[in-house]
Amino acid sequence: MSRKKKPLPLLEQIEIVGIAAEGKALARVEGRVVFVPYCVPGDVVDLQVTKKKHSFMEATAVRFHKYSPLRTEPFCPHFGVCGGCKWQVLPYEEQLRWKEQQVRDAFQRIGHVEAREWLPILGSRHQQQYRNKLEFGFSNKRWLTWEEVQSGTTFDVMDAVGFHIPGAFDKILDITYCGLMDDINNRLRNGIREYALGHKLTFFDLRAQRGLLRNMMLRTSATGEVMLLMQFCYTPDDEVSAKQAKDLMDYVHERFPEVSSLLYVVNTKANDTIGDLPVMLHSGTPHIFEVMEDLRFKVGPKSFYQTNTEQAYELYKVARDFAGLTGEELVYDLYTGTGTIANFVARKARKVIGIEYVPEAIEDAIENSRLNGIGNTLFFAGDMKDILTEDFIGEHGRPDVVITDPPRAGMHPDVVRTILGAAPQRIVYVSCNPATQARDLAELSADYEIVRVRPVDMFPHTHHVENVVLLERR
Image (cartoon, rainbow, N blue to C red):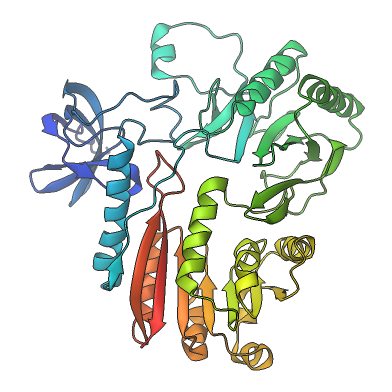
């Protein structure tokens, strides 16, 4: 006979004292740290423990005895269920304070490194409608909120279009409003839902891997252009579904003339990625343009572009300023993506060499240089640790400045070693993950001094923070 698990405890009248990793709030009970979502320092709550380990617990707030004076009203009707924007109840000034502390903690506890100068975190001018890209999934298994479950109501429609529920891979929360993007996202998503339900279109069943409507991706730009990519699932011989998909695209084209790039893809794979799938143009152009200073960047459905356009400009200005370019430098831009940073700094450098893993991104980078009349860039596609070698440096020249903007996992140890071997005078390290950045800085600090640090907030109401670091050779 198996032993019954002990019921997890209810902790009463516990004060929330801080903010921890992943955007959760923090309490301390009997020597243990307790992580709690959707709370604010100063709240006094009863906590139902959901996980109990030797050194920490996880819990949810089941009753509020006192609300913190810091607490603000969330702007989103889906707050607390959607799983995104967990810090809506925290004033923006407090969000910035905790994000800056997150960077400092990573430097001290992970990297064990110090900086000569800390510049204050650069906040986002807009805290709502700041994103230029959103994706919504379709599902025939709508997530029911606790209130809906408790009501005992029978729901005739279980189809949903919205965001995936954390921890429930096949469930979608039906979204009626999202304040992270221009209202076009709400009008398009809600209009497509209304059309789909009215015409009895099938929503995707993730477990069974069938259903016409699978995903929608929306992009906007500072030029006022709008891109919509619809993702359908049907086989080549399914003429009925193909006709339904075309009719839906015709409806979008007629109802939403502001969509300047209307695209679709047919995906019967087991995942939503489209990198290896052909994208079809229904109407308009196959791309949109983004602008930054006097530069224009072509953005296609598969292109990477920073999702907060206005704040990306501020981020790149910090990186360019840290690079200290005079027009004489050879710059290596590692993890260049579509060459945004490379092209942004090119006019202040002698030459810029960009390296990126994704071949399509490099094609975009080359095209963006051509569009802007920039002739001093050179781009290479491939795995960073395989391309950036001593032989490569011997052929193309030893860099004066290295700008690196790696993914969340940070730089591969081979890349760090090659940078140390290349011995540039300055390194500008842009990171979306202060923890892995601090780890890499520890490796670089043997030969380099951390001269200047500036966190930049790209994602208000989330725990995510970008950080720019200038290193100079000792």
